[in-house]
Length: 101
Image (cartoon, rainbow, N blue to C red; front, side, top):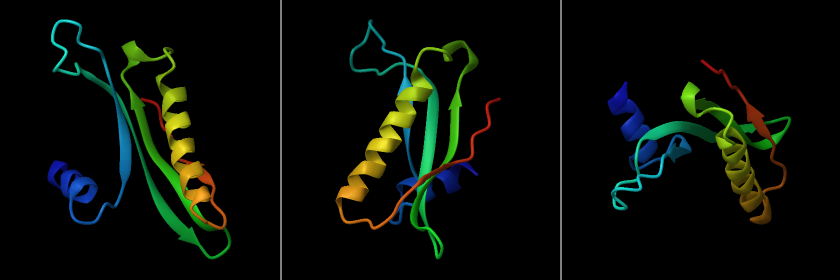
């Protein structure tokens, strides 16, 4: 499964894209710190709705919730959507499928 995620997200064809949230490591600026959350999304096509951005997953470690990370993910993905709309994407919506553990 991990190898599939690596090749599907970072291989020749990107089947999904995403963002990660990390803590800031004040002791070592070269190290971004601990990964505390992630969000993945992909584009799909509907004959009824046209081009669509689908947010597949979002996870934030429980001890890092309620600090605005989820909202930041939504803003980042909205910026992706806005970028593609400005690139002559005729119609695009963000669909979400979120489960919080």
